Length: 383
Image (cartoon, rainbow, N blue to C red; front, side, top):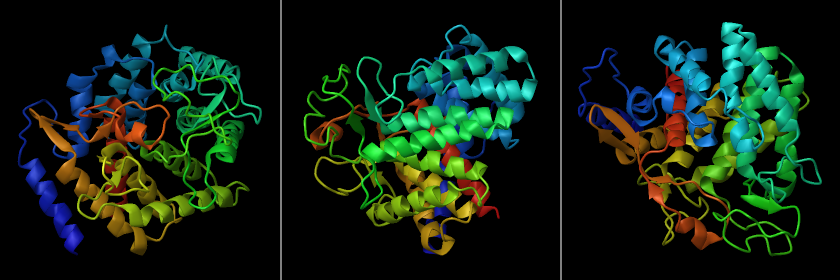
């Protein structure tokens, strides 16, 4: 009851800051984040064929699939995809994810140009370099498995399944999840390390900390918050599409249960957030991180909705994250809202590397993630 009251008070205090005079009235913070991106931060004509932008595109697609603001968001999706049609490609995992917009438009409009392009993306995806175990490499010039990749390719493959009904797309997404887990998952906690190097060639990515893979395990040694968020979101999104009697379901169910159980006691009591490196809450140099907080809470909320996680245990955790995001990580921008406490784009390194990544205000991926959590939370609490 206390946390529900906190949520209510926090919500009212945030919303009292705004009066919206636009043609469409947005009264809730998930709507205000979306409106800010659509109208100010990243209008459809400015869309870039890249992962950062594609995570927001995913949130818009989900809203349309659930008949939420479809008249407002469908034109955004179509313009964003049309304006980048010539740039559309699947040569890199961070490019593949935008293909979900093509698959969605092919399904909803029936236009062959979208379907043909989506299949072209898939054919290019199949030619991305692979590790020795078949995992899709996150880099082209060296062969490395990163946790980010699972979400970037998985969401496209899931959208292709929705378009075609061909389960092979889902099986490919599950296969990539398992192949990456083979190299990145810690069996004790279920959490994933950020990256694994398949060869002895130093990483060519200047964003990474030099020498991160120069150890016997050929991987870094930290569980990055947002990286684990990508995995949790992929897991529940896959499970939403699979029947419970599917042979892969028990593996996915055990995976999400273990991860959420690990994260459950690590939530910061004061802010409702998890930290940049979740297993060191409150440690000097560590910081609360809003995008991973929304990811973990989204996965837990969907896990409850799917009957995987017990509501009596995890709903207070989710309520606390929801109220904590409202109180600590929403920032007014005129009549809109944006996110803060976001870790900027991050590659691979040691503990100090993650602690010294930039904390930024406003990123398309953070807006998309927060909106997806917001919507999932209200679908769950409306039942």
